[in-house]
Structures are given as structure tokens and as C-alpha cells.
Length: 256
Length: 256
DNA sequence: TTCTTAATAGTCACTATGACTATAAAGGTT
DNA sequence: AACCTTTATAGTCATAGTGACTATTAAGAA
Image (cartoon, rainbow over all chains, first blue to last red):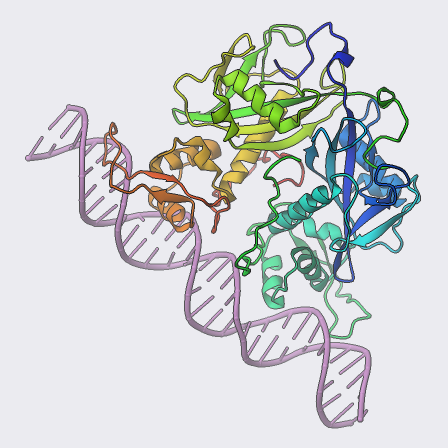
């Protein structure tokens, strides 16, 4: 039996499921990883916070649905959302993940620079950024989705230029380093970080006419923008866990 | 709006979808990557080959469905299939991917050692191994799924011990190297490969009492079995593409 | 025996890296 | 104005990992 339904059968005979997308939208503010959450206004899990998301429209693919929901929750224009990097994480299919009905959910991760006031103007009662560590128990299996999303993002910083998605169009290497340190939860040596970033071709490119960023306390930093590379050669490897007994949060052991 | 359905609504009002799993089951035989395909006996795509797969049962998660289908197609016992490494790849949601109805499909990859006669005894009219390169145009979007699966497997060989899943319980380093060369489509230097494998703690462990494999023409090789590590430190990096103008098969924009 | 094949051991130059030290350029303090 | 603090940037050095090799060993085949 292959993917499609046998012919001539009523589709409803084949266990119809509801299909949704869930989004783990991240940003880095004040050296902390933040995630966009919405408060549930109804049962089940009334009053609990959850990842934004929603149903696929009848003729919509999951990525389009994710962009649509993201625009609704963040109030970002469709142009902004359209160019955004959306990464499909995995799909959650536990039959009991929603107590009311059978729902399978395709999870996506999105990365945003720190926006002035990015909270929602959509249909969510309330939406706000939460410190990703302080995000209490979420509705449904969203704790698990969030953990998976953090694992994936952390891993992809190693061998892709994804980190620049957390930064504004022009940024300093210090800001980029801050992204790495925040997502990985480690401190990095500044000269070494700098050397590695500049040695990875296409990761960042210097902004010309030596303008420099104001505001800070120390020596002004040169500005950079994202280069055209997506893969990093050589990769920026995460320092190995010094912690002796730390069961890594197992991105992908089993479906839940 | 969050993942679950609004309350008190008829679930059928929310665009019911059929949900399936599709499996890219790989093995290495005669230094070629092979994939398990089934022939379609009905329209659409009658006579075309397709990835094995099928519908989720009403109270079954996708991974269970994948194992069930895998057992049906390969004739492997549930015990064998139960211990197998199944990797969720991604989910395909294009509204037009099945011309008859709306079907979203969760794709999995599975790796098997070369089995004596692994072709199906299940409900598929005919199932057989195909050279992964020669697999003609497949039904539905299965060419794309297959390509994505190959990309993912190739990438995971770099930083996980996944390659041992292609090998029998005891294997030589030459056989393991053959797996890497076949999946990556490159030739590797034998002494260097050996050094890297043995330097990655927990990748393989030597089988004791120096038995050696018979049959071959050269010096007998020591036997090894898979170690307990899943992640490789340091990783076994793929040699960089020397090909100047080769648009890498680009799984998913940023992926990998 | 000799040839061929494959496994295994070892060498060597080069690259990337972690851990540093040093200098430069800004604001703040006294 | 003379310092201190802070941050950016430049450079050093020992070491691990790697690619490209050469050499040796142990089997079957000619």
C-alpha cells in the first residue's frame, strides 16, 4: 500500500485527521533566548501558554500556513514574513496529543532579529515574548516541540550561517557572538570567534565605508552583513560539553 | 489560534486530511545504494514504482505506522523491525501531491544491512530493491522524497554512527568504508578512514578472539561491531566537492 | 614461487583550534 | 588632563586532526 488512498473510496473512510502547524519563533534579546507564545483563551489548557499555530486551509501547504500564522501573530507584514527563514522541524503525531480529536502538527522554527514591539495583533488573545528558559509548562506537547526546536537551532548554528537570521541587516561581530553564546549557553573566546567567522568564506562581509556603531562603551566595532553562504566551511563547532553527566536532550529519539 | 481545534466544532468542518507515512528504505549491495520500491497496481501512476507506505490507523502514531508498513513490505519480523533505526525526515503537504484527495505524508528513512532476499511478502503486488540512482521517475512526489532522504542520510553519516546500521552485526572496516563511499559517491583513502573511525570513541569496538573474515582475496580483516556512541567526535567529514559547478541537491534551503 | 589484492602501520606537512598576550579606541572618573 | 574600564582587533604558540603518501603483512590466484 502506497501513500495515496485506494481508489474509489470515500476519503472519510480513511481516518480523517486535522492538520495544523505550530511555530517556535525565536529571538535574542538582552542576551537571552526568547520565544513567542500565545495565551490560550479556552479549554483545554485554558490560561496556559502555547506556541502559535493553526489549521491548514484546504488548499494550503504547511509552509504557507506557517507564514500566514506568523504574520497574524507578530503583526509583521507579508513582505517581511515572506523572506523569512522557516525551518520545518518535525511532525508530531501522538494520537493523544490533543484530548479532543486527532490532530497531527507540523512544527516549524523561525528566527527573528530583536524587534521593537513584536507582539501580536492577530487573533490571539495575547501574545508575547517569553524567556525560553522560563517558559513554564506549555499546552499540549509544546514543551517537547520547543525543546526540539532549541536543539535543532543550536545544532544548525554549527554548520550553517543561520545565526545571522537573529541579527539585523547590519551587525557587529560582537552581536553575532552574542547570538551564539545565547543559543548555546556558553561563553566563547572573542578573538577565536572572530577568526573563525572571518575564515568561513561567505559567512559575513564587511560593510564598506568604515562606519562604526555608536552607543557602546568600548572601541567601536566594524559593521558586517550576512554573506551569501548558507553552509559554513569550516563549521563553527560548539565547545564539547564539559559537564560529565548530562543526558543531552535527545532531539529525535522517539515521536511523541 | 493554537494547534488544537476550537471547541465545540465538528472536526470535519476543519478540512480533514488523510495522513500517510512514506518510507525510504535503504541498503548497500554490491557497492551501490539500493532503495526498496513497490509497484503501483492502480491509478494514478499505475505501473510506476513508489516508496512503500500507507495510512495511519486511527490510534497510531506515525512511527508505529512506519514500522508496521516496513514489516509488511519487507517481511521482516516485528522484533527486527522494532529495533531498527527509523528517522523522520520531513512532511510533505503540497495540496496537489495526490490528484485524488488531500494527503499529507510523513516521510521516514530506514537503513538495513544487505539481506539475502528482502523483497516483500506483504500486501504490495511486487516489491524489490532498486539501485537508488536508476530509480526512474517515481509516483507522486516520491522522487523528491527519495532525494531528500539521500541527502539526509549522507549528512548524518558525517556526525553520527548511523553507517553501522547498513552493516551486519559484525563487520570489517573495509565494509564500513564501502558504506561511506557508496552513500557519498566518493573514494576514501583507506588508512585515513581507518584512523578516523578508530579515533572516534565508541564508534566501533573490536571483536575479541581474533577471528577473521574468510572469502576475500587479500589479508583477512579484523571484525568489529557497532559501539555505543551515536554522535561522532570528531566527525567524519565528507571531502569537499571538488566539482566547480555543482548545485548541491539543496534539500531545503538551509537544511544541513 | 611469484603476482595480486586487501588490511594495517606509519610518516610528514599543513590546517584549524584553544588558550593566551598585546594593542587600539572609545567613554567614564577623579 | 591623567587614568581606568570596556570592547574591538591583532597576533603568538603548542597541539590535534587531516590529506597525501609509503611500507609492510597476509591471504588467494597464476
